[in-house]
Length: 575
Image: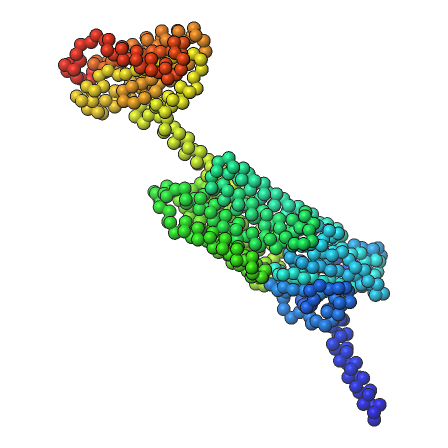
């Protein structure tokens, strides 16, 4: 009877052991590599969550694995340590190299072992972000390589630990050719996109150093911080610095709010802050001040959140950055459409680039949720879109600078052109005097009869007299010098020659030109006259002295004229 009882207990124990241990182990089907180049294993089939921060060795990892339970939910959005046990079989007659890559952006600790069927244990290279010196470089991910002998079976053991798993922790195993193709695409696209962003940011920074315009430094911050953020998030900075003390892959999420703050300021300065009114085909449209306030407030909020994030756990930081992205997406597109509506040329680049970036950013955010399955390569997609967006941003900035240059040239021209006669003014004369060479001549001219025309014929005729005078003078001296209106009815002719002989000849010709101008004006205004004085560089030692001498001679010429008292003449305009 006692023997039967013991047999029953042994039978029940065997059943329990089979149910709890043997069945779960056999449920993990063995992966056989035959024709497949890539095998993707879902997270819930291979990983188990464990409470193991720093494994001392394989036995501790194995023990933690067997003491844990299979996953009953996706790993997306979680944090902490996970262990995978993957039975593998090489069905080839040759030894093959394989690469295992967990789909995790941030890995603080990565330990791998290959356990052969004869219990021989091989420790593989560490594959965390801070301990990947001996593992292949793969942007946005980590990979560990291992070799399986012909017809060999065994178990691949992996341990990972991270502060946040942005996507489901699927495990993909590549053969060597497939991994090399993946490595080429991931690394090439990532490095090219980062290079584009940082180069464009450097160009914007150099423009700021040259111009000191706030919009250029905002552009440099917008593009540059995105470039630095992705250089960190992709693992490129870790691969370059080879540091084991800090995981730079987390840095990109912390930089994102500051990059969006710069984006807000760039957008404001590009479209709104520099102008109060924009002209469109529908007439002038007053830009609403609320838009400026929204951009400023959102920029301040992003900076405050970036500061607060330094004291939060990384999962909260990750969530805040994604919420900022979800707010920026509609705001940027709305501003682009609004500026395009008011026919702002800069908006065509801004809207195209930001629309592309925002769609990719939405794709990127959705890939970090469990709403849609199968969104592959979110990092590459958003980086390519961001690089294109940065090019469009710089094109928008170049368009802004071009408009500023046109406006500057217009203002420059207005400041140097007399509004009535459309010839150069006193400011332009001062600039021209500073550029004179050794031989030059100055003719100071004062019109006679101007007061009588204004008093008796009206100021409209006075303006017409000045306009006609400037036209006649310009026609006479256009090939040899310049005409300036220095104020009222005063004009200055300026000649610059190469030799002294040319200067003397030009002075003699000038007297004839003055007489011809006076004669042509008197055909319409008989009482008009031209008083003038000529001085040259040979008889003076400076432009100011030359100008003063010409003014004195003009005064003597005016006083010495023997004319009838034109104030008694009937003032008429000849046809």
